[in-house]
Image (cartoon, rainbow, N blue to C red; front, side, top):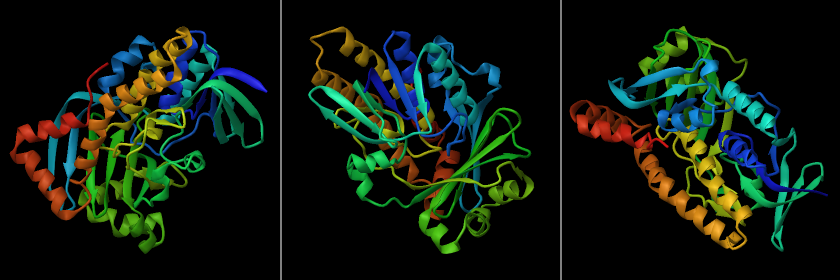
Length: 373
């Protein structure tokens, strides 16, 4: 049975960035990802510049991939009111297909051992050690497990995490498209029961990602009917969808997206990224939060391996504290801001507030971007 220092379950932004840093300190790191790189993910693909100094320091800012520079936000209501706002901190647009693959290559060169096309079926902690079992019954042991397995996983069910017992009303859908759209703009368009984000990524491509009501999808039967009957009631979305070319044969779809509270440590597993808590997409900058959460646990894990007096209890306590310090309020803000989207009354009010009260608009924008680190 193979033993390693650290096993990271999930190879998204949180898993990859933490793996990179831990491997730099000569720890044995195994990362398990159920898919084969490169692949697409349902994601808004806009990253706040709060993480740019961090990525540049590690020499993993993807400048060579041609990310777009984004500094404007267009917000529209279900009734086609609109307001455009500045994004003082701003961000960049890059596809997960290209960015995740780049980080995977960097981590592999750093010495991270990848296991792909397999998934974790169980994690058991006993006598200070983890036993991780894969779907093909291969077993590995390690000292630390990092959970970076995303929004909703079968492993969440195996671990009996409370949020899995409650149904979520949301479905997420993503396309890449080609069409006319400003390269420095991110648009947030409301429709009944949800909202859609549009922004440019590399290679003249556009990312359309939307969050819709699962009930609406059930009512209309399929994605195309949902878009025709619900999304296109927003005139801006109708113009975009009817004038742009879809680059995917089929949309990417995920069900049961949950924004309920999760714990950063579950059964001694250190959770990061969406596995620790998912903020409302398109209003909370989940990609930047994933990168930041992966970086927050690294110094604590390094301390755990370097100092005999630094116990597992202290590691878990410190990580819970630092995670809550950085993200608990931000997640609450995200859930609050989300209430301004997806209905006639709320979305119209949000646009009017942003138009008539500049300070309130700046406050709302500020809540979608964290401090640089």
